[in-house]
Length: 578
Image 1: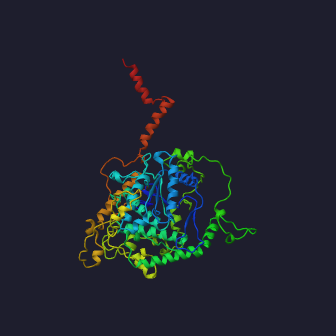
Image 2 (image 1 turned 90 degrees about the vertical axis):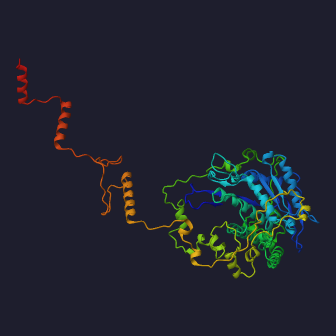
Image 3 (image 1 turned 135 degrees about the horizontal axis):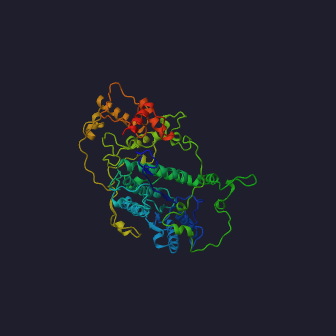
C-alpha cells in the first residue's frame, strides 16, 4: 500500500494498493525426508485427472480476488531426471482442464519461466521478470480510491474503473516455485517494483512508471522483500534466503559465495534434523492436533496426513462445473466484494470514544512513550538509512553512482556472517545483467517473449571531481533552492491581518464584542449602520413619537375619541357659516 501522507484525512487522501500471493503447486505431492540426501526426490502421491484439488483452490481465488488469475511458474523445465518438471506438468495439465469450462475472457493465464536455467547463462533474468510483471500488472491493475489526475498519461492508468470512483484490482498474480522461497521472493520483488511505479504515477509523484535499481526507493523495496523472504525462509526452511535479488542481478560480490554455502548447510541441517519438530509445532499452533489424555502425544504419530485430511462424506460434485455459480456471474470482480454486507452496527454515543478516536488510539497520550521505541521512528527512512553520504540530492528516485547503504554498513559491523544482500556492496549499475546470448536463444523453449526492455541497464557517466564538502553545500538556503525566502512580517502587515480576522469574526457572528488593539483606530466610512443578517441593533425612538403611534393604534381599535371644546367651537362656526 502506498498513500499520500501529505493529507491527514482518510476520506480525502489518495490511497493505492496491490495484492499478490505465493503458493505451492495445488496437488498431492511430497518430498521424502527419510533419506539424508541433498535434494529429496519429489513424488506424486496420486494423480488427479479431473483437477478437483486445483479446481477447489482456483475457485476460492476467483471468489476472493476475481479474474484474471495469472500463474507465474518458476520451476525448472529441463532436467536430466524429472523432479521439478513433474510439478510443472501437474500444474499445466490442471490449468488446461479447468480452462475448458471458463469463458475465454476469464480463463486462468499460465506463464512459465525457468529462472534457475536462465540465471546459469548470461540471460538478463531481472529484465525478463520486468516484462512479465508489466504485462501481468496491466491485466489485473491496481486499486486507487480517487479518479486519476487530468494530466496523468493514459499508459500509466491501470485497473478496472467503476462509477468514476477510481480503479480496482481485479484478479491476482500467483507466483510459485518448489518451496516458494528464493526464486519466488525475487519474482515477487520484480512485480512489486513494477507496481510501485504505477502507484507513484497514480499519486502524481512520477510521470512514467520506470524505476531504476540503483535508487534509494528501489533499494528500500529490495530490503523490504528480502526481510520478508528471510522471515519465511527461517520459518519453513531453517535458514535465510540463499539466492537473493543480487544473485539474479549478478551484482553480488564473490565473497557472498561463502555465505551461500553456510545458508545452504543451515537449511540442509534444519530440514534433516529439525523439520519434524517444526512441523509438529505448526500443527499444534494451527489447532490441527488437539492433545488429549487418552490419545498419544503428537511426536508418536508416524505421519500427520490425517491431521490435514479429516474423513469427510464425499458429495458427488460436477467435474465440469468446478466453480460456484455466483462466482462466475460476478467476474471479473470478486464475489466476496460484491456480496459483502455489514454484519454489526455499533451505536456511538460520543466522538471521544477511544475505539473511534484515531489520535488517541495511535498516540496513547495516557501512556508514557519513549520516542526511541516508537515504530514511526524505527521505520526505514530513505534519507537516514539509504541515502549515500556526501550528497545534496535528497530525491529517492535519483540514480546513485555510488550507492552506499548506511543501514547495511551499520548492520554488517554487528554481524560478521550476514546475508550477501546486507553485506555486499551494490554495483554502480546493473549492466552486469547483460542481454541474452546465443546459448539463451537455444534454450528458449518455453512461452517466453523474445523482446523485452532492459530497464535495469543504465549507462553511467564517469564520476566528476568531487567538490569540497562544506556545511553550506549540504544544507543550501531556501533562496538558493526555491528562489524565495521566508521573512518576518512587518508590524503594519500584522495589524492589517488582525483587522481582517476581526472583520471576519464580526461578519460570521462568532463574537459578541469586538476587541481591537489600542493602536488600531477603525473608522466607518459609511453613515449606514453596520448591521448584519445575524444581529441588528434596535433604533432609538423618542417618547413623543411612541405616544403618537399608540394614539393612532387606539383609534383603529376603539373608534374616535371625544373632541376637545375648542374643536367643537370651530365646527359650530363652520356649520353656521352661510
